[in-house]
Length: 342
Image (tube, rainbow, N blue to C red; front, side, top):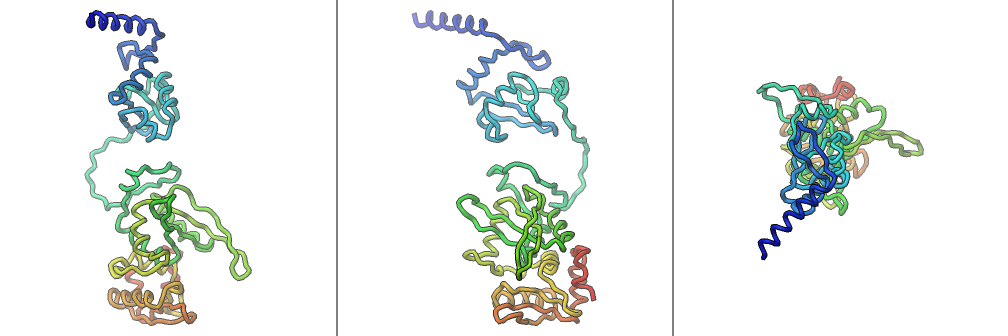
């Protein structure tokens, strides 16, 4: 009796399924009719076996194990994804399917794809030399957030900026990771834009104008913020203690020629034929740490001066300027060369 009931139920389900309006997928993709009711039924009852294939206009291909996973990754509703599959049409820059499709079949449906050139290039390139801008892209997932790494050259740039005018925003409940901020006056726009092109891979938006009042006079500047990434949290922990900027213990290794160049471009001030580094915001102990690195690592003759009682500054003597020029000249922006030229 039990087997008879099971057999009767299977026949009834088949009859109901055949009576529903069917959705026929074009022959290049499938050779059978596919009911829209079956798509919904399969999604609700066998989520583990559902596969959603997503194709992008840049010739990328993604596979998801469920509609929920696809929805979370692309930040779209599941209803929108199901509708795009039923209509068998592209949605924005994506084409959704529950089957593996060929490139020619996608183009027949009017989905244009920019094919990437197929080259067998084995040339070695320095890590980080071809980083593209990520301006305009959405929020990174946690996985991508922890995958982002900073190449050595950009690390030197960031260290030099943090020694000068840049800052790292502290961690809070909203942002679990730190982010960098950098601001310059409009007169230094060429150098600012140079820095922005170096850090645009880690930014989500373009620079914006700012205004401030200093000494009863309004001034305008331009400012950028990076994304909140785990790689920037490491710099925050190095340069900040209880929210106060300090000089890291390992500054001897961190202060590379690239970092020194950007530190001078940001905080350097030409004084007759020498150079002054404005370390006004640091304690005397921190200023001495920096001066020791300049003396021991780069063989520069320096002295400590005070702009005000609690504002130490480092003065690089005239006789050491040729040595300094040979160290940082390759990393200097043309608009800032006047600071080290005699």
